Length: 115
Image 1 (cartoon, one colour):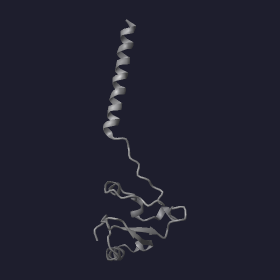
Image 2 (cartoon, helix red, strand yellow):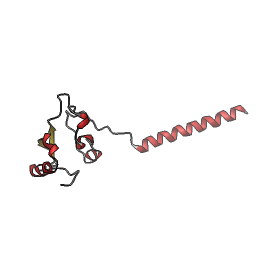
Image 3 (cartoon, helix red, strand yellow):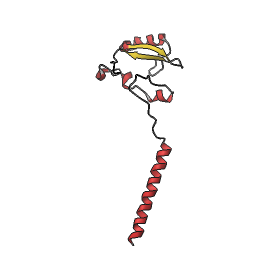
Image 4 (cartoon, one colour):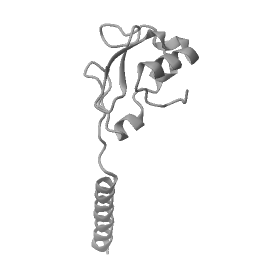
């Protein structure tokens, strides 16, 4: 089974389990509107944290992946993670350039006042 692939059927999950028996702790809970299987984990505490965080699955270490956000997936409401959209780069760049121009202008104004 190809790693990183979205599972869309019980059969695919069963094939995945053959290669990754540690995934036995995952339970299929639903399917999203694109047909991707949604899971819960037997190792989740009522607080939504892993009961053995140091030994969690590699899959869990990488969750949520940036690819999920790019594909438009929403995280389960009980998930402790949130996708937070950063300030667009162009907006941050414009602000930095404005601040730099102001700083340079202030430096020039200070120099002309010293003479």
